[in-house]
Length: 524
Image (cartoon, rainbow, N blue to C red; front, top):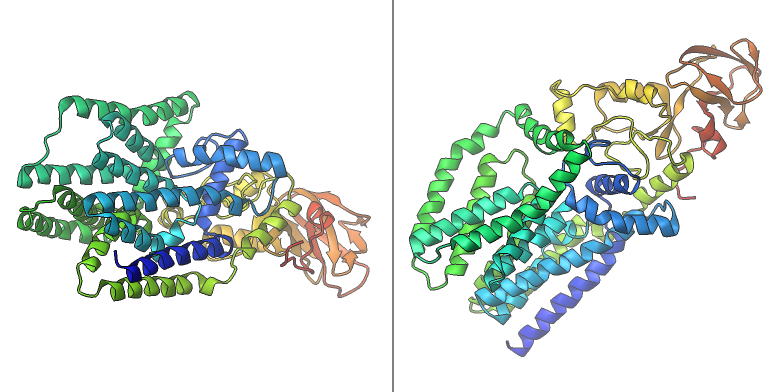
């Protein structure tokens, strides 16, 4: 490799590390991260995923993260910056995938291509940003790339099967990946006349593949959670198809895209590099199948293809007359895109930590909070489902009932997340009528009408307050002397100071320093 190219390569790598260190502490927390961490917390609190609380992902990622969260909470209690600490293992998974891209590139081409593939992948914005986040896709991608390295390096079939079984226990999308590689292997065997699987190796691989999923299935069945696991991972996710009217488009074009892929595979069958051919066909099969049949497609679904794409991109650029200029331009474009998609590198983590500060002060352990997807991490939710896209789509079509109001009353939930468009209409109306904004969260209560009337939806202890503190007057015909238990229904407060703006608020919220007259929008 020429000296100038080495300087550019290692400068790119060093710049990537600097950006990663910067954005690790500044890149905004995604709602999916908060949901995943809430699921992890459930395991540390003695709950069983699916049975006791909702999640629509396979369980291995959350189980593997639970020991770290347990250690953090054991050492520092319920900390508001826990999500930042829980991002740390993602750095290791990022390193595994980047190393896998280097190793595959080195074996498919040479050392130079392997290094550039790793450098380009590490800086590629969709991979760079998603690999920062606490999400199942990062463990899934790391296991997948590790299995591919094992295939190329000739690891034992049992070990490769074990890795793929772990990947399946992280994400059911592994089935699509395995099917795509199987089809690609069949095309290589048919067109290139290369590989013929041995029965003994296939049996060993299948045995390794079955071990982790079988162990998890046995555990959930013994815990009385098997039916819930099947519902959350298969029935719930699959039901999204009934809410979408455009799925026929992808399925209609699939025969044409598949035919085009077969033609390309036949067209380039004469190759001296069957591994390159195999991985290129794998990319094609996975892409056309995903586009044709997957219900909900996102950039995360393409994470397993990004290392292979980086390898082929590096090889294509290296074959140009002036590769140095193209490599430099590609790196610069990635940095500009990162700057744009990462909010100009501004610190966007404060919103979540501020909300967590308020959640930990406003509620005590054991007191539920109604949030959207588990954003408050350490508290149980009164409503089973997380209000993510699939849930909201099914609720809009009447497939899931909006029981939020009844669940809030039944569980005596006095704290809810702030208002926003992700709340279902009925739930949003109930919360807006019966909860008061106290900052990033809401507490049960109401503003008093001019005649002093108000209603209580969630029974509990309440105080009547003004912007100066507790109010003076008569509550339901008797002198108001402080916090009082109020039943659901209509109540009336006779003001001692006519015209004074008053509110009735869940008493613990006021006692813990919160008021609708003085919003908490900063950390404590």
